[in-house]
Length: 80
Image (tube, rainbow, N blue to C red; front, side, top):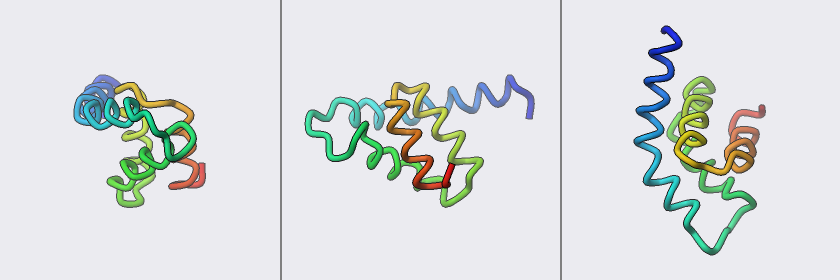
């Protein structure tokens, strides 16, 4: 996969994640620090695949997700 194809994939995924990320970030009552619990739930769609999880994480951040929240979710999900 070329870097252009990878960027296109991340942009497409970011568009898909954007409504969910906006809803998460707009929530007034936070249940976990930096919403990591909500991002962990979204990372669950990677079904344990670390490569997919990292792509999803990049796409969520591009869609406006809290970087620290996504990072915490990645650590929990994949031990990074």
